[in-house]
Amino acid sequence: MKKTGKCPKCSCPELFHAGKIHTWAGEGLSLNGGIVSSGHQFEAYVCTKCGYTEIYMPEKRLSFVKEKFTSK
Image (cartoon, rainbow, N blue to C red; front, side, top):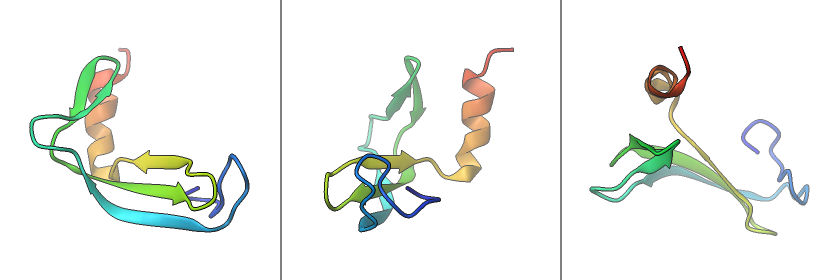
């Protein structure tokens, strides 16, 4: 969605971009049983036709995910 500008499920080109999504205080998004982020900003793309949603982590936080969750 972010790159193509259309929904991968229904091909609708009408997307809502939420540039600032925050997790609730004290909670975070879980990845492989570990907390990726708590209280950090994300961005989302929502299809206005079917509701399919993609959430993206800011690029500056990707190094944390790579370090914490990739096998060595």
